[in-house]
Amino acid sequence: LAKTTQPISMDSYEGQEVNITCSHNNIATNDYITWYQQFPSQGPRFIIQGYKTKVTNEVASLFIPADRKSSTLSLPRVSLSDTAVYYCLVGGGRDDKIIFGKGTRLHILP
Amino acid sequence: GAVVSQHPSRVICKSGTSVKIECRSLDFQATTMFWYRQFPKQSLMLMATSNEGSKATYEQGVEKDKFLINHASLTLSTLTVTSAHPEDSSFYICSATGLAGAPSYNEQFFGPGTRLTVL
Image 1 (cartoon, each protein chain N blue to C red):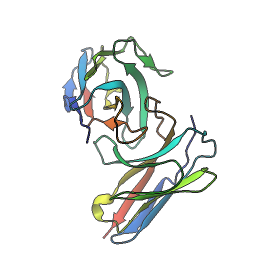
Image 2 (cartoon, rainbow over the protein chains, first blue to last red; image 1 turned 90 degrees about the vertical axis):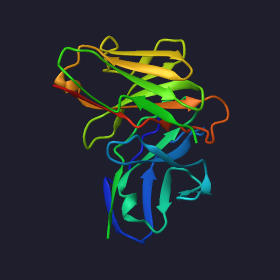
Image 3 (tube, rainbow over the protein chains, first blue to last red; image 1 turned 120 degrees about the vertical axis):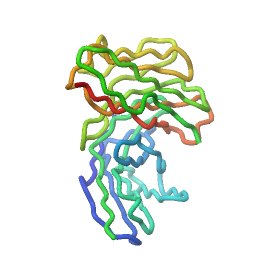
């Protein structure tokens, strides 16, 4: 299982774009990259998933360079409600167990 | 989207008692369910992986006789904390992966979690 490394915490302001980068140097060929969001006392919530290049959905974008050794989650125009912990995970299959890293604690300021 | 529920959401029990936590996939059949434990300000720690109709696979360091997992159907898995002690107090979260048709290749759907407090 590929290990991931993320910043422990980040601060930003409402309305700003936030980019959180994750390193996964040992990513395997069949691994996908998935990001989850977790609020206190709640289960993680899926944000976005990708394999290479760029993926965009209604809440975020995911940028993956050609070597796939890192990925960047981009949250456009954040609000106070985006304050949460964000986890970057890599895995290769539907039933693969997911090992959570420490995540990034994002704090949005008014 | 796929919904996973947990019951109860919160439980307080006395030391030495057993507590059962249910995890249900409400609108899909879950081939695999995972159980996690999360202590305050820490990340989720995988405890075990369970597949319907077979024995659970426990992570290293997790006592299988203390944390009993039953995955009796494609929509229900239970975690029983036997002879609970204060150090078992934690936030327990389950997740599930569905049959073919999940919107994302490796997406796990997480339950809302169960807060266990052992006095």
